Length: 260
Image 1: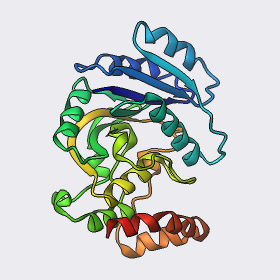
Image 2: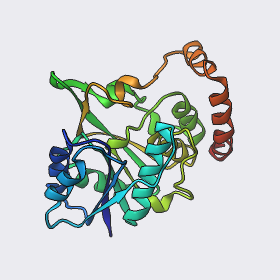
Image 3: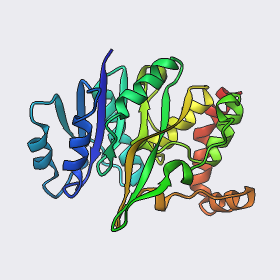
């Protein structure tokens, strides 16, 4: 059994030392840590090398030239997961702190559910200048308690309309995916959760496994997510960019068929 952690960094000097310390201090250690740096202009890489120590850490430079930030981030994570070449992969953002039980908890959940491709766990929200809050990722992206009992068709329909997976708190079994590649314009966690839901391979886990940091200047994150309530609000949001929506409908069509 092989386990790896995959982080993507970009101008992460302010946070990366704390993040790395939490990844390397897990009660169940990963075999390998893969870091994909997205062309940082600060001293992120020197900090990574300093804190890597004797751990099995591989540092890669992003091969993505995509101008769209969603596409670039997704490409970076796909690159990291493929390089990790592990049975179980634990994803991380460059500014979050892993709880010491994270790998233990998520590994147990994946072993208990052999069909699961993507495990979406919870996290505690930490706001810059405020500190830890009582808010969790699941408060922002709620999932009905009966979700796990639904057929894949209903799970997929729900996940199309509601984000349920935050990448930094996810773990995956790469071999359970027929294809890890993420279509252009999608984030990795969004696409992988849709694929997993369509194929009955998504497991939503209530365990809090990270401190999810929200800071000023984040390009993507909890405060930038569009989680429209109600059918009319959801429709209005997506009709606002008809071209992007039409492309996404094309991307989703095979998953819709698979979920039936």
